Length: 127
Image (cartoon, rainbow, N blue to C red; front, side, top):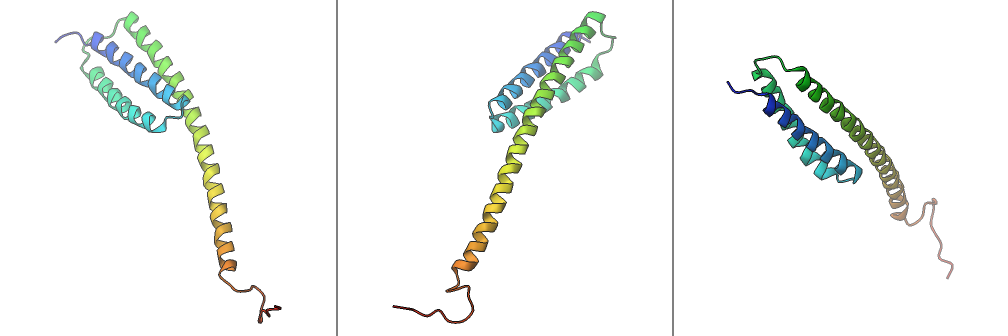
């Protein structure tokens, strides 16, 4: 069987590239693009799991160190993406709260607008 280490490292580097693109999309508030890239990221991570299962020999210390460095970078990127996503969720929660309050005000106003008068009895025309 051929050595899977170069392929394994190449896939980790591919994941880093996807992770950096996800971070860029989050920084630019390109949420649809972020989701699209995230789907590719999940597929690439699944491929890494497959490759790890077929590596027959222990990885050299040099390869392990390179992978360790890449994993630290992935974790840093993921942490920043998560912070940006949390900030976006807070924004959306605020917008939803404002929308809900606005709907409540509109509904209440509509109830009063549908009535000729909110006072009991007849309204006399003074003209």
